[in-house]
Image (cartoon, rainbow, N blue to C red; front, side, top):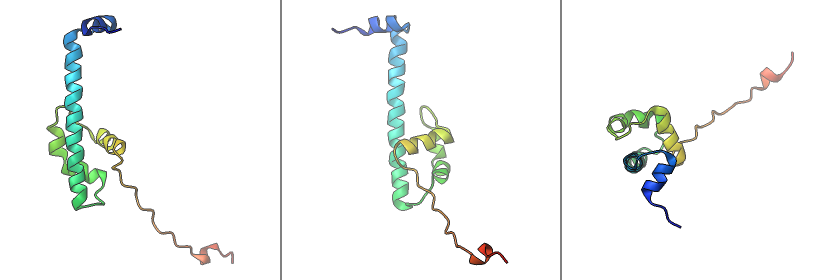
Length: 103
């Protein structure tokens, strides 16, 4: 059973124009995210431990020029979805036995 786009749009209460506009916008957004991920990978190739905040600052001009600009939190979400966040190193903990001794 196949349905026409106008029947589906009518069922959901949206216009065909709205459907196609949303579809095209989604495609543009996906393309922008792919380009952004490629730029992040290129920067990480040069500097492997470059963190998310610095990446955001370096790419801010390009992020703002996207069809749907990303804020910092959405940028971090995009990095997380693509497994590009860097785990923070845990500081070395030295055990000071003198602080454990009861005098």
